Image 1 (cartoon, rainbow, N blue to C red):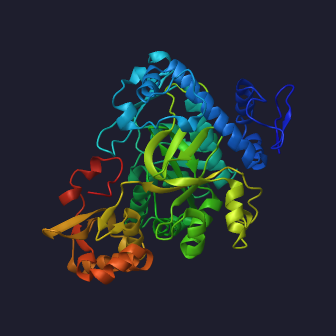
Image 2 (cartoon, helix red, strand yellow):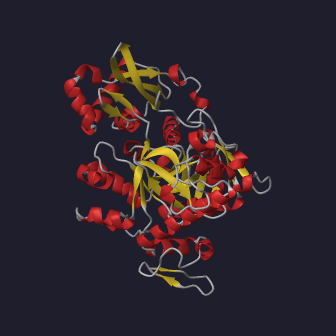
Image 3 (tube, helix red, strand yellow):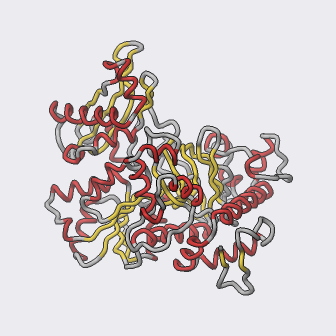
Length: 516
């Protein structure tokens, strides 16, 4: 049951009596804004709102967003008309065409994608995406939506890391990129923030000066946090004297990398977002981390939850009142930002991430077959769980190389590297591609950038062995292909000194590139 409080003349809404249209959307907006002002009221609401109610509200708010965009956004109105849809008669969201960079962003100038076809010059900001796809894009945000995003980031941080104040060291790149500045401002609600950027000296220096009596939250891209630990170890920094947590973002991570970081951090969780849509779309929680690790240990659970066993996705939770998430026939995730007042609305926007959604009640039903409840996966004393939907993400749909019919993913390679922490300590980054030494004969090629060492044949052989062993143990397609084409399936590993070969200039990039 969801009880709406703190609002004059508020009413009680239950899953049996609520349906779209009973409460006008304007009133729903006011109620949700009031509830979002305080961590306690937001958590209480998300703990007690039944999945059927939140699902219905999410769909209704997404439909409202689509209708408003069709009425007020020139580019979206034209997009609908090009697909033969009358913008004045939208009946449901699932009848609408998808949008993405190629079909919607590239053909339409930025002002035409904004409300009323204009770019407000007061109270707005422009974020720039990292350019990981090759071309940086500009995304405009209004003040209200920035505030919503910051509140949600702060909520997830407090939900996962607790109520005690934190010293937050924000190692995301600063400047025009959305993640750095937004995260820094959002986490001011959770403690003292210093935006160090990805600079090892600044982080270690700050920790030395502030001392060991604080709880630290270090925020950044997964490869940088690994680099931070490795550099600290090389300099003799005493990590054990500090209480540290890690919040990752910007790209996925394997459980091997999480384990590597957990040697120094008390907890490691990731956020999920896309600058195209919004950062802070979703976040790992202690339960989702435990769920993913359980699925890796018991492949029958992975099959029941995610429909396959070779890949176990990252698992997040998201607030359905703010975002409506669907999947298409290719299992790609479609996002609609369903808050009112978004300056540049996104309707069924496809970032081309493969994944799916499970409501809280659906997840519970599937786990019940194995005698498991979400509560049993939570840390001791964690308290009541939020009933937000579970978003699972495999990664970009095209992030794979195929050898003799076997798909190999970057996470497969990362899992192999981190299977042996002593070897992983030498690795800064890697890229997965295909090697064709003779026409028609392709082999998987893993190019590895080293942290500080020079390449050696011994290290190359050790990394090749651990990657191949991990592929054989976890990837069924690969294992079957090895039986048919044993020589062609052995990965070729090439090592490079930092910043050399295919990694030349990589220090200038915000994110690592794992294919190509």
